[in-house]
Each structure stands twice: as structure tokens, then as C-alpha cells.
Image 1 (spheres, helix red, strand yellow):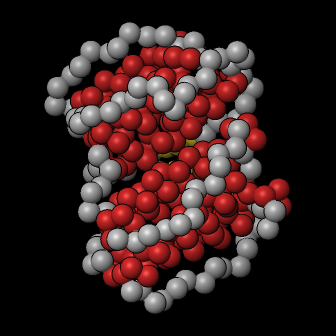
Image 2 (image 1 turned 45 degrees about the vertical axis):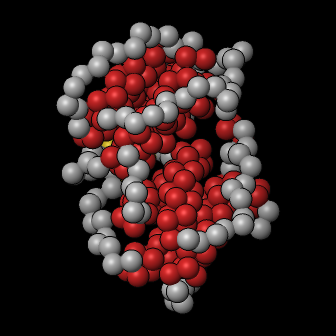
Length: 275
């Protein structure tokens, strides 16, 4: 299928298949299913879905390394954010599925899941919800789940994008003993501030409602990737904004939830300056 021919309905069917394949992996590894409700999603576009698929790619790559699977298919090239289409999302989901196939082979899982018929009514929000569930399933099977350090790197990168777009703010004070739920709440505020800035510039933006119960560090990471995608898109809307380079220093090192909370509060102030 050509990239320009893919619809959200195709992405949804493929994401549902991914969810089923991950269920086979989870069962083989003896892990319990995450039954917590996912947040309610509104007005999602391919770009938000794409960034949640990036999170799945990062997780499935780590899982492949943990179980000794060797995948040869790289992730597809990332298109310009303002040109993201469902076809780009489909390509990335396919890359994740390819790596899941190698994982299943390593675990000797012979069963497979058939793709369901296309439901034309499905929208990007449906795909995003499915990928949120898939990312939770991936977190369940990882020996080394995603931690505050992973979330910190994503938020620090978002902060770099906000800074280049003109959002200046002092580093927020460090507050001890913060928990993942505190970080999640601050990232929800960041998402709301970014949505306001994007909407102000005449573009549609994501709506997300509902904090999951018993917030885990991996939940914070998943939300951080959504925030990163929105801030990167906001950066692309600001004419003449300097680029963020891959070789720039990032948020490396061991981080605690309090560090994530600090950089999220900083990002929130930066986004408020752009609203």
C-alpha cells in the first residue's frame, strides 16, 4: 500500500493486530495484563499517533535485546511533522510488528493473530488509544521497564524544542520526594499549555483526559512522548525557530521522579510563555 493511500482505519486494524501479538508474548512470558483504563483521547491527529508508535518502537527494541532477538528491519525515516500522514504511522507500526515477530521466534511462539477487517469509521484517536494499550503491554514484559531517566530525556528534549521556539524560563526549583503521579500531573499541564499554543496558531491539537490509577514511571514516559511530539510540532509552527540537533547534550544520567517533575515544571513555564 502506498503511503498516501493509507487511512486511519488501516492503522487501527494493524495496531489491533499488534495488540494481539503482544498478548501472545505476554502470555508466553507469564506476565499479568494491565487492566487499568486508558485516558480518554479526543481530536488526535497522525502526529500524536506517530509519537506513541515511536514509544512502542523504543520499548520493543529493548525487549528484543532482552530476549536475544535480532531484528534487521530498521525504523522508517521520520517525515517532516507537518507532513505526517496515516501511511507514515502504518510504516512505523509495521516496523514494530516486524520486531515482535523476531521476539516471538526467540520465545518459540508459533501462534499468530489475523488482522481484522477494515472499519472505515475508525479515527486517529482510536489508533492512539490502541497504541497506549500496546505500550502498557510492552511495559509488562520488559525486564528493565522504562524509568524516570527515560522520561526525563524525553521532557528535556521537549524543553530544548520549546527554548528554540522562544519559550524562555528559569529552571524550576528542585523538590524532593516527588512521585510518578506528580510528574504525570505536571505533564498533563504541559500538554494543555502546548495545546493552547498550537490552537492559538490555528492548528488542531490533542485532547487527553483521565489520569490512570496507580501511575507508574512507564506511564510518565508514554505521556512524555506525546508531549514531546506536540512541542516539536509547535516548534515547527514558529517561523525561523533554530533547529534542535541530535548531537546536542541531552538529559543523560540517572534521574529520580523529582528530576522529571523539575524539568516538567520548567517546560510548563516555557510553554506558558509561548501561549
